[in-house]
Length: 251
Length: 277
Image (cartoon, rainbow over all chains, first blue to last red; front, side):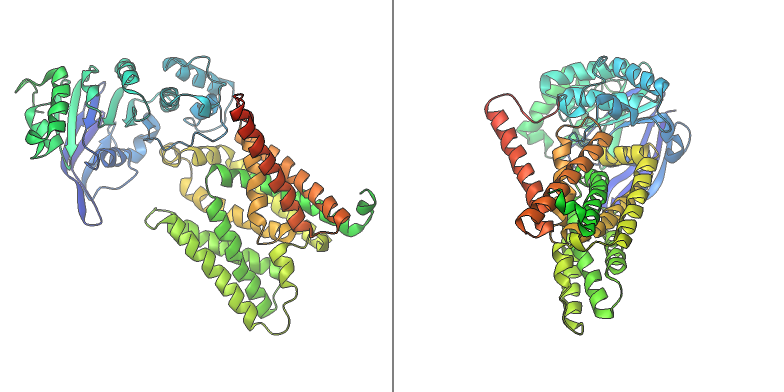
């Protein structure tokens, strides 16, 4: 099992961010964790990585505690990188490796760039790349040490809507070689060939397949979701993937 | 100009400028790419508390300023570590508190504080052989720290959270970098003074960043620019009988403004001048 989250709770300054979250992600799964802003998506990811401690409950990554699994996990954070730093794309990818950097490490960086379809751009300055290319370079950095689990936090935040579909297809291809977990508030990922999907808004619901069950929509849009025009649009978008009542099998 | 260099005090001043430029290049580059200029400013001004303490107690100024700067850097790093307090507010408060303490201690000091101006505006012409040894020692320490932690600094300044997940000593670097800034600030106080120290710490790295392809190249280029500004400023100050610290900063500021104007002209002409590919 790649990820096992059991009865996880996290509170900050007396406010519950996550309550009794249970989640199991099998090896090779391609999971999207969807939720509104402030719903606890990034907090859940940071708990999985062991960057913050839960108030209660347990997270196990690749069969052990998160801190012990970090060397086998690739992480693409939410736009924390400073693009103005004078560094080539290769330098950025090499940040994913510890220890001395030699010829073999540079070859590994070039191989990781080739996996994200950026072969030949190793010598370019990172800051001169487009938003989508920078995101791919950061994924190459996460892949360079060949992780078994890849965690991505809002990876399409800097990518235009047309580019997102290509990007999700690319992630689906990656899912063949590693477990991929994407945290996003972009429902268009539902058309990306997910093997499972979860919604989080303090609580978490998950299902197999790339579709949202009605109660997951309820969790996404809250009790007012049924009367909210924006929610109707989003529901329609989600329906492009599959919104048939009962289509999702609750886990 | 050559005649100026025949005097020992000018030779010492030039050597001090070159040694200060090395520290500026190393630490200034990290401060600029890490967006820690305000923090470095806070440390620089908090150092005034140490100068005031030295005047009040009669202790040597450099160790007092160094101790106070290191203390301020530790407090700032500690308070901002978990991001629980607003970084800019805490730094601003410590900045002002250090200055206020220094002013009060100077007020309470017995006798005339005539030497105070040399610490505020620099006294590069009064640098002694002992000061030069102190500065060379600090440069060696900074060089060693950068050499040992170069890749960690690169990851830390680029993306702190990711660096943490890859096992970089993020907490250590969070405290180390402000401490290195404190060492550099104290060294620069002798050259350009406490008031002008930030210009020499930020202008050379800013200019270097525009044409560098790596952090190491940026550090080397910033050190070179710093050395040029110090040498040119010193010789101009000699020739026109001006305050040396202020002249060094004026040369740096002129280079900064000229580069900014050239960059703007390049943008207007559509050739994107001044930026690396």
